[in-house]
Amino acid sequence: MFKVLENEQLAPQVYRMVIEAPRVAKARQAGQFVIVRGETGAERIPLTIADADPKAGTITLIIQAVGAGTQKIVAVGPGGSIRDVAGPLGQATHIQKWGRVACVGGGVGTAVLYPLAKALADAGNEVTTIIGGRSKPFVILHDELAAFCKQVLVTTEDGSMGVKGFVTAELGRLMADEATKPAVIFAVGPVPMMAAIAQQTKPAGIPTIVSLNPIMVDGTGMCGGCRVTVGGKIKFACVDGPEFDGHQVDFKELSTRQNAYKEDFCRLEKQLP
Image (cartoon, rainbow, N blue to C red):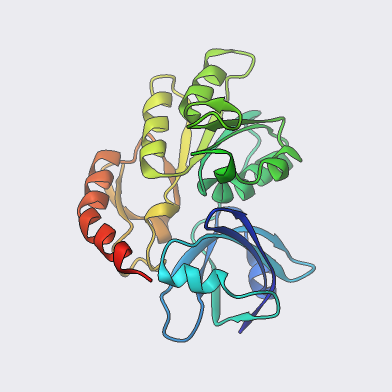
């Protein structure tokens, strides 16, 4: 059992939980994730490790409660316990000193972006972060990112915070100015957002790393749910990634596969209590 020390709501359906997991905290590297089960026999849920404190023996998870499994997990308050936290899993982010780096996060993808941006800043990079959401309540971790980023740019679809529009517009402005043009870009968010960014940056020849956490299911590669074609070869996001060269990912194929069961998922969501 893994004790929950903190549990706070960051945004609608989004929670930050601090959990005692000393061995995971000691071994974890940026970009890796854990498999969480709230109770015996429950669904296995892959969650990115947003932060870790090896001295305190804790890890931080940011969870979007959209299904029955995640709703049960975020319902566990401080002092309660979670049945399983297995990890760290997945390949760690390749961190080096590129110079000027842009990190782009959409929605709850900002939670995945946070440890990457922090590791990049710690390596001596000048990090500019662009984060977006539907509206102000859905924008998370602004202050936390501002603590180590050169600047944090915010976009919202309704204009309630930052610039009205999408993250791609702000990224375009950075790319157009030689004084702010990044040497490399990291993007995490919904698949359509990452696809749009990869398409945007490819003509400019800017290396773009995308994190395919959103497509992971069981986290072991056995279910095949996170199968993706990268550079003409079949990969599995949970074991070969979750990060890949965005210019090599076949987003068209990935989007088609994701939409194959869209109607079934929508029908099941309506049946949830």
